[in-house]
Length: 358
Ligand SMILES: *Cc1c(COP(=O)(O)O)cnc(C)c1O
Image (cartoon, protein in one colour):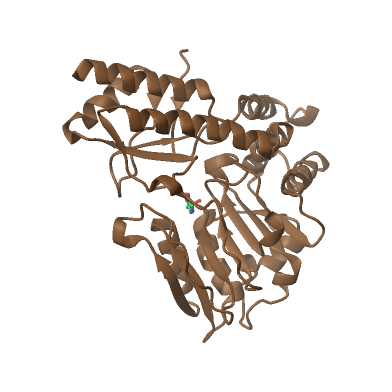
């Protein structure tokens, strides 16, 4: 089989070590003679997987015992509800920044539970930049942002100083892509299927002190962070397979380290953006200073070439380059596990296409 270069935005490319380990475990998990997908989640062999995945998250992000980690279900989207349900009481206010579809959905759900103060928005330019220089009011319950806007290709490289306001962040599409000070955050969440594993589980990281500040309302058990965190992802049956793949991806991330991962990711993104800027047929769509290293959005200046270019790419085993249905154009997702050879193959295709059209 020829290697397919996987630029999909999610579910997305994973390290080969995680795929190989998954294949082996589907046959015979941890020498149990049983498949990973037919064993009890409470078996000793499997509880070790959840424990290791949890510890790897803490090790990689250098989190101490003041943080709790769990792998939940319902996608990042359920977090849009759980966060305000747990922390935003009726009549209270939370601050959000609107940087795209996902941030917008988080805002929509928060409004079901309390007041939302949208501090800034980049909707005026179809979310092609990250708003800056806004003040975070001192009296809000928390401030919520989205570190990487998967659909638009913008990324927050700096987080505002919240002056004691709890900092909550959707890191679904750039977690573990670079070093950052995780200890500044009260709550971080990330759907696994962008940069950490297959679909089916969502990582949540909560500062224990924040857990004690939950809103005074009745929270259904399955939507209560305290229950899930105290039960270490095992209140009910977790996503057995997905957490296993996450554990193997996290082993790989830890082995490389976040600093080296950032270098890898920067090299890939620089290579592709340089070609977009050089090539006469293409143009980038996001503000240069906010260009994401994870999702690279660009268009053909002549829109009539778009379908042809996508077909041309497909023939060269370059997959997943069509932009999100809400913005169109092209998008190359360069998550951790994508190798620079794949980016080079895309750059080569762009150059060949340019010669064809000259
Ligand atoms: C994909 C994505 C989501 C939605 O994730 P689901 O797991 O499908 O609910 C939310 N936020 C960001 C930043 C995303 O990239």
